[in-house]
Amino acid sequence: MSDVQHDRADHVDPEIRKKNLARLRRIEGQVRGIHRMVEEDRYCPDILVQVSSVQQALRGVSRELMRNHLRHCATSALKEGGDAGEAMEKELLDLIYKYLD
Image (tube, rainbow, N blue to C red; front, side):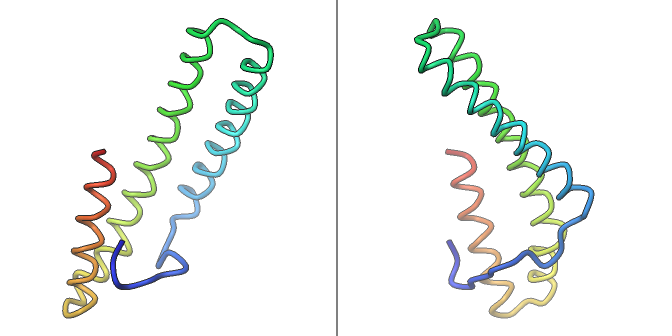
């Protein structure tokens, strides 16, 4: 992604973190359900509906992560300017391009 490497987010709203973890637990359950459907040779369109549901749920988690990143990590680095600002600008562009794929 960018030249600057981070291990942890600068700030994560505790409520957003809690909601994302709950969403991810639901997604895990949905994926296990899809796995079971495939094992049981269930009707393909039914499986595809469930796959689509998981994809939509993951997009929701992605949106919240992006929102948090823009509000906290990116804003902080861009305000700082200099190398940190330039690295963040590159990171954001890379993220946007990947997100649009």
